[in-house]
Amino acid sequence: MATKIFINLPVKELTKSMNFFSALGFSFNPQFTDDKAACMVISDHIFAMLLTDAYFTTFTPKKVCDTKTTTEVLIALDAASKEEVQQYVHKARQAGARIYAEPQDHGWMYQHSFEDIDGHQWEIIYMDETQLPQH
Image (cartoon, rainbow, N blue to C red; front, side, top):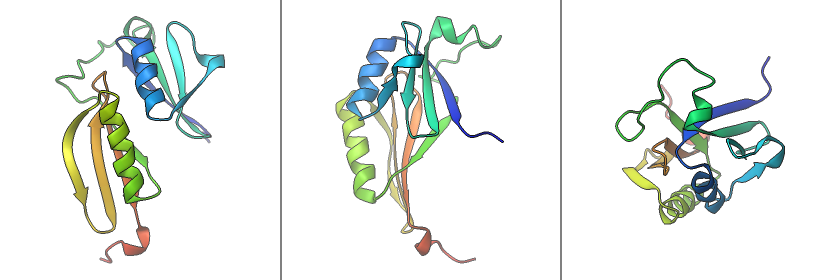
């Protein structure tokens, strides 16, 4: 059974992408970071590997999509509160993210989304499962 998740994302300029995510409070594991790749620590068991486009293509025979016009994946991360969602998205905007959707409040779930500087879409979500509607 898997114990860790590594999300591999192609990036145009590794240093700029690292600076963007550092501004959001993420750190990087230096053991798996060099001039072609950076291991961003999301949690103890979740990591995003930021790979230069050229290096990313060594892992797949498929063409790297243009994330400015095509959605490749929606990466959703949980937050501890609605306020934390708002703070996270605010930091992302300040670091250069594009907000592509208005925040949504469903009562039991609050979410807000942004696109990072490479076009990858991130959703930050707070869920209060005690308020989940019963079916």
